[in-house]
Length: 199
Image 1: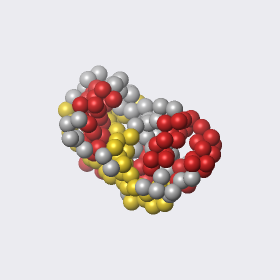
Image 2 (image 1 turned 120 degrees about the vertical axis):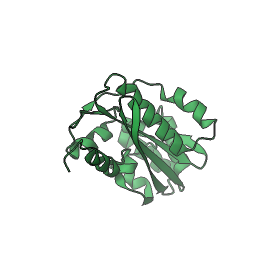
Image 3 (image 1 turned 180 degrees about the horizontal axis):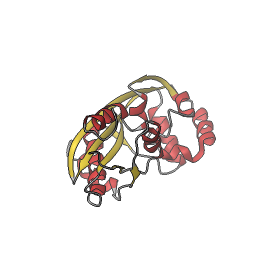
Image 4 (image 1 turned 60 degrees about the vertical axis):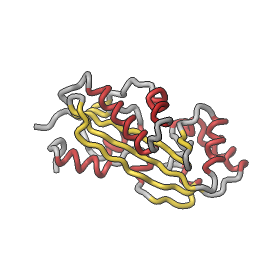
């Protein structure tokens, strides 16, 4: 018998992907300090993929404590440029510096998704996408940020591929859903295998 499905994320993009796929779910964002969880990982030699996976697990486990009879989806994404891991920019100046750093270079997005039942991880997956940015003129970056406004602060790379951010890119190696932040095809397959959705 199918259980209820809970998304342990406040991300509008993840919510839309699941909704558009026809999945019946409720949203219960995790209440965690992600940076404090991440700090010891970054000093321990953990890869950006590891960090995304651990944070996705922490979110789902946190929510599962109050919803033990449901299946909880946790997701997280990291952006890595070489050894540097980026976070969502705190303000427009930080967004500008992020885009200057990414300009003309290839960065990696690591999108992790886990399923937790009764506090136990029953499945996990990390998908990777590589994006090469165009050489971005500082003046163009300023105009781009002025145009997108606060939306630049809602994603780790200060761009949304589904909107004007696609103009910043030269090449993409990876799927759209990974870039948005939820590898939905393997997630849907696992939910079908578990009998949580029709299939």
